[in-house]
Length: 522
Image (cartoon, rainbow, N blue to C red; front, side, top):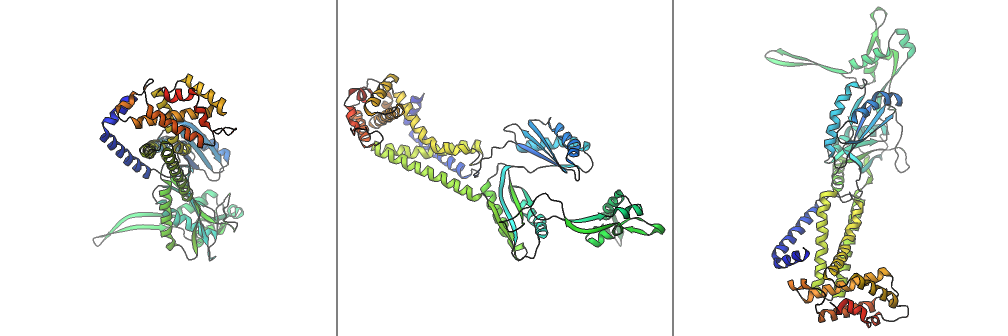
């Protein structure tokens, strides 16, 4: 099979060259379009369901929210594992799917089953799907710094939540912009229980009054003078005074009872369980950019940077966006390391072939085959791995594969050409150990190198289909002598295989066993 393939390739050189050019072009295109990332994304396909149940204890959340959700999600097609976590006021359900399950197919299936269980959840519990990202989608982080000292952390958090967050979520391939740090501004109603009891006002009545007073309604249209006028009533609460004037009931004699009569209205921060600080200088407000699963991290980071640069002119005076985490530097360094190692490998292989074979055409074979092998590997990489780091161990394999391939090809060539048998290898190894003191592995490496050199010289000396007829019993005086000189020269110049007594290893070639087995009996 292999001989027929080689014979066909020699007879159809133009087709081989054309296929090589197409392979190189396709490989270059795959290399340029490969998503770049420095961290391998080995996470499972999962969908997160978050349900807010404000003010409820973890056990209540577990019984009324988490348990119904987890039992329903167990029957989702392709779901391998379902995990539920209950916290104060929050429920998280993780649905992990089988390998190779499409993320968006999984999200659509979860939504279907979520619609079935929503009716069984208590009022106020609103389940939502998490972002379509993964654990390594955290690609960029920034902080808002006020150099002028004019804005407190609550104002910076409002700037982040109501301006920067929505602008950055519009960047392609950004799944989520999570706000961190600062204080979330709230209008807080602090009720006086004594006043409520004295006036006969219940908490439910106060809640209903606030909901009815913070609303907007339409009244259809009114036709006047052949023109239609839309009727609309607005009643949004916009300040502390608006809250204080909300009617919550009637007193004696029909006097309205206002919210300000039974409660203290104030602006305060939302309850929080953590803070963020920057460089030990105090609390800071920031944002975390989460990338969609499977997208190009480097392109997404560049797009985020460009968007931030365009938003700087819209920020208040003295406020600056400071990057605190940027993965693009790590990506560039990882790519540079891989590129440098491959270039070094090309140079080393070229020099070794040129020095040991003393033949430019043979060295050119390695120079061409190495890049082509890597480009062909990039095609499979692009098809199966997804991004540059989706298989971190593949980077090392890619750097070592050409050398391993060359060695394996040499060993297979020796086996195919029947240069030596297993018995002869054992005999030569024993003689190398006795004369030179080599280990078994060193002896095998010497035999493989010498025989591969002989095979390469045979193909150089006899080009064409007749080179495939190499077998035991053929005569090859010129190639045998040339390979003999090359191996002797290499042994004499190599300090690795020098004997302790200082004897030049070429003296070993005087016994007939090595030369007979390797060269003279070809």
